[in-house]
Length: 358
Image (cartoon, rainbow, N blue to C red):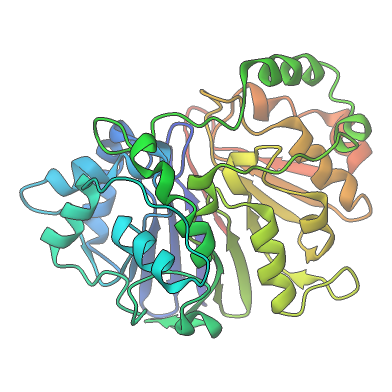
């Protein structure tokens, strides 16, 4: 019987995700590596698997890329990657050159992950002749295929989203050449959000004005739909909702022709600025996965979950969390679940991280 699973491994407030697919033989894809400690905890499993069809580093946020730094410091890499997707400064600059209207450039700065990929000799962005993982690369016009019959449809980023990161590249990379903080939530907003959480008034939270994430690193996220055996999961990284909406519309999605998904791995750990009401209206999905321990920004935001619940009150929905923490366990409420027609999936008692069938 075919297998298609998503594992959300413990990754602090970030992502360390693994897709597993296949029939007689299983294949694997790795998306991000969380922070340093997360990689070290995950290393034995990575070594046991041994080979990945694809290793994607979605963007430069520390909670997605930091774990790749100690990986590439290893004298012997614990696994092999047959394909690597990562847009480094070279790709940002190339995307900028490819555009008619260019952005002003920042200073050149090398980064440890780029050097590590080069040293590993793993095929880097090899499916793209320009080496740019972008919607504007010709190869992105059709799904890309991987061994074991997995198909990936790229949804983000575009050349412009990549080029817009250039002016802030150096400012966003710290001592380890990583973005160490996410500015999408100011302290005042966090305090306001925590106040609202106490009541969990779903209708009120869902009605709050949507304000879109505009941070450049998040906009550069590599985001795709993975499809196997007729099932689809949208791997949202930290993407901006406008580019995902536009990409889905190009695939034929609309409010009257919703795009079917078997699971949405929710963008930016459930930040209220990354899953818009407009996006929810053009997808047909009842399973939503959140990867975060809630430690830095108290994600997932209650507004995001409220919008998901209020958008489709008639059907049973499933919220999947890789940590039981304050911002997730508050939704494990029988009265709320009955009223808003949903269930919650959490890791087994005493454990973190979760794997489930797509």
